Amino acid sequence: MILTHEYIRHRSGYAFGAGCCWIRIYRGNPEDAPVVICEEVPGSGASVSEMSSQLAAEVIRDHFAGGLPDLPRPLLWIERISARRGRGERYFLVTFPTYTPRPEAPGFVRRVTLGPPEREPLLPREVGVLIGGAPLR
Picture 1 (cartoon, rainbow, N blue to C red):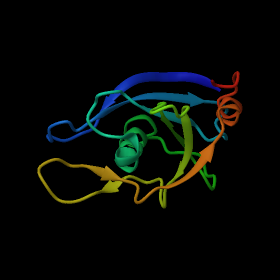
Picture 2 (picture 1 turned 60 degrees about the vertical axis):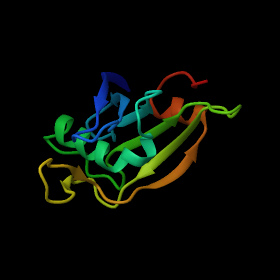
Picture 3 (picture 1 turned 180 degrees about the vertical axis):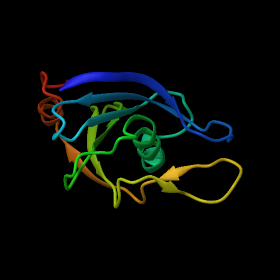
């Protein structure tokens, strides 16, 4: 896997403290599912878990306009939750009911969503294997 994008993504909308996160996109062979690691920016105003469906939909819309691979999980969306109150960093593999962005609700701001997410815990070494690099801390 090769890191192709790394940036801070602001959640779309006009709400105060709408939140932002750090996005890293890894791509491998065309038949492999891309891996996206989404990490909360401390003090941004919202948790990654609360924004994952909308953020994933926006990332797919903006970076994978040509489509995702035809796989059961065409995108591996991983949330990294920073250490808090003595707990170590935690990783979750997030699965969505669909990987096609669709409008969330009518309104002034056009948000998209993938639907309600499901989370599976991952170990840092498993994340390291998915991105083809050394195990993460």
